[in-house]
Picture 1 (tube, rainbow, N blue to C red):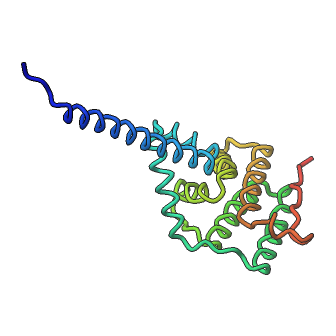
Picture 2 (picture 1 turned 45 degrees about the vertical axis):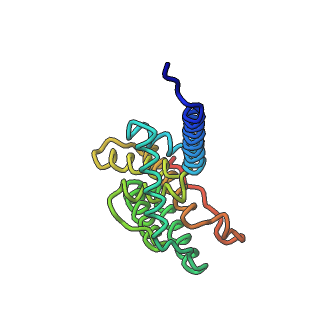
Picture 3 (picture 1 turned 30 degrees about the vertical axis):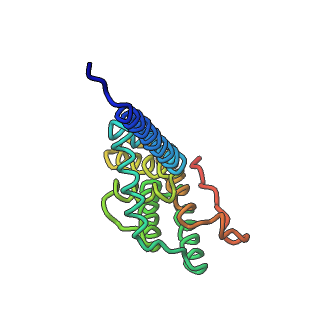
Length: 197
């Protein structure tokens, strides 16, 4: 009768246990990475999963965004630059009642100018939104919503309330990029957007 030596059984058992431990470690690491990405990107995580059709592809995309933005030279604005941008926004807002369509275009342009000044590249919209999502995941949806309204307006499908909402969306991103909360010393207080009568 042929019997398997005990040492082989022990080696096989240890190998199986080692593989199970390794598999558990890999799964744990993936779960931690998924949780980290979910926490960092918030709703953008779910949107990316839906858009790309799966968690693995989405997580790969989000990690690529992080690496890309990590290599950018994103800088804070000098107080004088922040004041200039804040003043430009105030002037833009004051023209909304007289020219809502023009103000939406100007708001988009001012946001782009601010992004460029901070160091974000000015590729196509999806690349800009992806880059912004790394540092400002809670307001990137505002940027997308504002852009969608601007596109509808270009087709003649947006009303004044839609345009007002686009400016509100642009303002949310603008404030984050301007870092108003940190800079607020009574000088850079957000002004309400006038509502047409």
